Length: 458
Image (cartoon, rainbow, N blue to C red):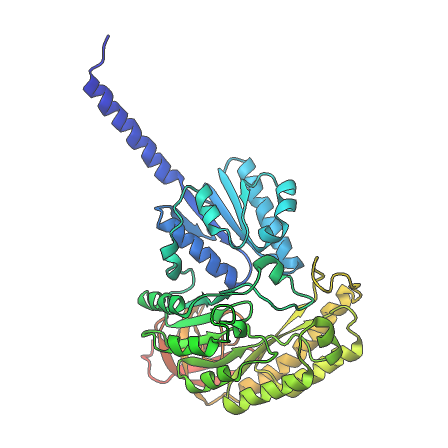
């Protein structure tokens, strides 16, 4: 019996339509992000590329897609452990048939690709930190270079991170970042201004400039440090109200950046400047290219030229050979400098770094004890500084509602790592994403309690 060609053609169309529908429903990608804000920006760029290729994409979803991309961190032992555990969990899901394709990218993949391919062969492909086009290729997606100034953000819509450069040329002996991120590469000012304008169009009010090393910005493409020029250009972007600076290297800190912070109204009176230590002997072994005296002079100049600036820093304890006397120098320095914000890391012995050939002779117990002792000092300092804020009137950017409080930040506080301002939601209503003028009514070690100056009672 011969079938009518019209029926055959219609049947083929129906089958194609069903298969196409199945394909659309099946191709859901879940991007899992681990690590720092720089990784978050990388994931947002992955998501943007996929969405413009008509993929259905989720981020850190509890309901996995049939395709999973794990964006890993390889900074220190705990981060590496988390990344490996996440990859192994996804590999088990693939074995169980819940995932069809599994890809790994990011710092861990960049640094340990060969080892990972041998140890976890269930992963379909591994990609380094600068291999986004390759990742798009295996997904049969077109890599669109013109999207580099655009991205879907996964943060609340009123703030976003903006990476101004990639890589690092510094040679700190404890740090593996250059091994994973390569040499310093600055993004041109015009590209960053375009990105800021695109972010402003979708409602972003605060941009947090991030890099492995902010103050090196521009040296590769402009043959001079150009961070202050970038700040001048971003100052003109309509809709952006706060510009925040993260991860600045202290040695030979460019003075024009201090002047820009003081002069430009949109640049927050805030600087994240990891100092790592205060003992000259430890700083020398770390290859930090700075002394305690020079550090004190820099912090003094910052506070003189930008009155009220919040200086955030991080310290590293337990570096090889760190004696109790050297640690005490650090404690005395922190006590004396009274940093507005401070975090503490424990030294992690990383392969192929300058310090790796030196014995990791400070025990984990001593590292933990020193970290706790240093944070006890900072906890007292933070409480005392916060008590001084009671009665002050400050603008606050409202980030979210959590329990019975609206949670916001002043210009002196960054997301996740600094103080938060709590507004009682049972008494007052404020809108998330708005700037609200408040008066500080009470304070604890790391939280401020505030009342809106002009808000309707609930």
